[in-house]
Every structure is written in structure tokens, then in C-alpha cells.
Length: 424
Image 1: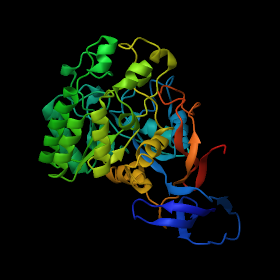
Image 2 (image 1 turned 30 degrees about the vertical axis):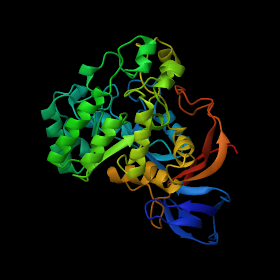
Image 3 (image 1 turned 135 degrees about the horizontal axis):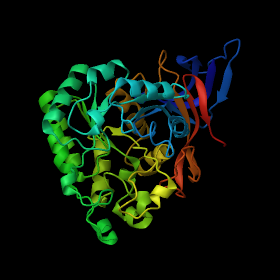
């Protein structure tokens, strides 16, 4: 048994908040109350005085690079990075090598995930080989354990393929997540067409690339009734399209990354390839509209798009280096620093965006704290000031190294066991 004492607890699902003790037996919470006694027998007691107890975070957009790219990351190191950032449940993307377009590869990655201390789940691909031409056996993949579908990293361009995928996903009551960048508009990906592209002397990626596909997919979602997720939204026009569509349908979701609500294209100028990502960092007006979307519920999920790369890859010229940054170990602190301390969100609202909402979209038993629920929780020192310098991830490709951030995970507990503990 595990007894958490003297914590200030926030459950974003029920809205319950206050000073409580939390007793876990195995992988379940058995009691939440005041001054709980320690049961007889083997019981670990954790004094959480001055700490916030919250549900384990849920990230529905991570790249753990296994199989095929394990020099960048693997499922074991990715899970360790997740635990260090307070995530007890993650959903992996399917752009591996081979891609997860069949049940055999899916079972391999899920088996590997079961070796970690957290819940490692996976999407399957929408199309075979991520080629956008032929649908995967979606029903078979769902039966094999996929929790959703995506070709993330590659946009789906065939309208009829997208419509068919949405229809099948709607039958299965499973989400489809979309990478919204139409390549016909893009000369060089990862860098915004504007001040950043002018600085590097390249064509860059214009906002129209995202706006075009978001508009199409929202239209098809409303037509089919499918549950869809607009991934890593980056433009103010895209946010407004989602806002309007949500007034017409309840199955539409959108996610924002910490880097898109924190940084602009000026970071690409300053940090170079460490701030190159798809979709790219855009203008201050876009960043502010993303924050407004988080505040008013247009954007209902924060996800990291954790995308590890080697130092050698990121040392290439701006047009040759891969896009993406790591994010699991800094996401919560960026949310607290930028959104809570910035006065945009309460802590309860931030936790809802990072746990309850993503769990709900994927129909996961996660993202809440209540008796009989999962013993997946984190203890946070919300006032701690710290500087990211070392990472559990294999990779370190992030512009946030050396930043002073507020809020740090002290302990991560998954299935009733401590899977991460900081050195305080």
C-alpha cells in the first residue's frame, strides 16, 4: 500500500480540490480523505506537505522511434523521459520503420511498452506504408490494441481516403489524428514563411499549408461524425476554423504544443535547427490566438509532439536538419510558467488540458483522481524554480535547455508504484 499524506489535491475531472490524503492499494486508489491512518502491514508513507497531487499526465502525441530509429530514442528511454515529466500514459505515433500498419508491428511495440513502468499505448497508421493510397485494416488493428489512427508526420492528401478512414473510425468510436500541412504550398518545411524564412534565405512553410487541410478535415468530420484531432495547431486561422466547427459538432478536438504556445519564429532565428519543427513556429499573433484557444476550450488538449533527434542530425544545415524537438520533460513546467503564472489558466484548467481531456478523447481510464480509480498520480512542487540541463531522453534537441522554469515534478506514481523521484 502507498499513503500520500498532507497533499493539496486537484482532480480536474470532478473539480474536487483541497487538502487530502490519498491511499493506494496496488494499482487502485482505495481512499481519499483527511488524516487517513496507515493500514497495518506493509505501507509506504510519502509526506507531500507543500506539494500538489494531481492525476498522472496523459500525452497523446509522442514519437519513441521504435522500431527503426532507436539511435534517436527507444520505448524504454522515451518512457523514462515521460515519467520524469509527470506522464503516466502516452500514446505513440505510428511513423516508425516499419510503420505500424499491421497487427504484428503493433503487438511488438505494445509488448515493449509493457516492459516500462508507465502505460505506453500506440496509434496505428491510417494508410498502408503511410503512402496515403490504401487504408490499413483498421478494424483488425483496433482489435489488436491500437487506441487511434494517424499518419502523423505525413499529411493525408486524398479526400476520399480521408472520408473512408473517418467513416470506419466512427464505426469503431476511435479518434483519427491529422498532421495538417499541404506540401503543395511548402518550399522548405520547418521554418515559417515570413521573418524566419527571410533570415535563412529560404522559401519556408506558409500558413496556407495548414489552413487548407484543417478546413477540409473539419468539413469531413462534420459530415461523417468521426472523432478527429487536429494535431499541433500553429495558425490563428486554424484556431478560428476549429472554433467555428466545434459549434456545429462535438467530436472535434485540437491540440497545442508547449513550443507553439511559448515560442514564435524569432526562436528559429535565435536557436536555428533546435527550433525547427513541423508545423513551424509562427508569429506572435498566432501564439496569442493559440493561448486564447486554450482558454476558451477551442483547443482542448496540450500534447508534446516529443520528437527526439540526434545531435549530429540537428547539426546539419537548416534545410537538411530534421524537424522536431523533445518535450516530455519540460511540458508541465512550460504550462505552469507560460499559462498559469502568465494568468491565462488556473492550475486545474492546465491539468485538465494535460490529463483529463486527452484521456477522454481516447476513452482511457486515466486523467482523474477518485476512489476506485487508477493509482496514477504525480506530486508537483508548483513553486520550484529549475533549469533544464540533462534529460532522461536519449536526445537533447530542444531550445528550452538553460531556461529558468517554474514547477517541477517531484514524484511520479504509476499503478501504485513510484516510477520517478526527483532529487530535491
